[in-house]
Image (cartoon, rainbow, N blue to C red; front, side, top):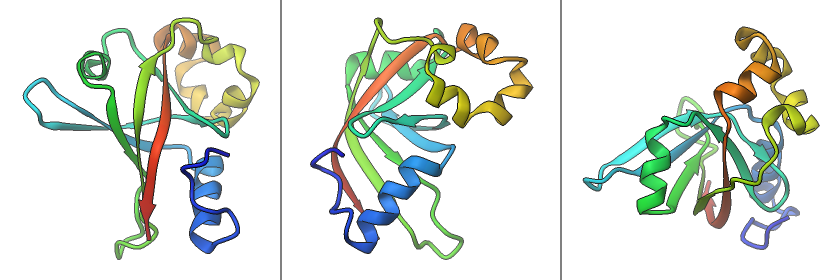
Length: 141
């Protein structure tokens, strides 16, 4: 795992690792041209080093990242505000990334959700732009 992640032998480190493996939605926040944070829920895949997010070609977040690659990601907290995980990092469009249907782990993770889009191939056509986000810091409770 990435060296910025908390120690996996601690309770917080174990929760972070589990959420990166098991959660299906993470909030990706980019910064708009006017400096306003722009949060969006996204599907993602953690590979142990980076977070992969697919995007539509018209997604405003791609313009935001071209201007400012610094992003944050967070999971939903519990109803009373516990189990907070916030990841900051740098995002980069990866034009050489495989499409979603070419990554078995991604296809398996979202198999049930993709049904609404018809197929993983349809999803890959609709969301062809890959972002790789390299975490730089993790905090939470």
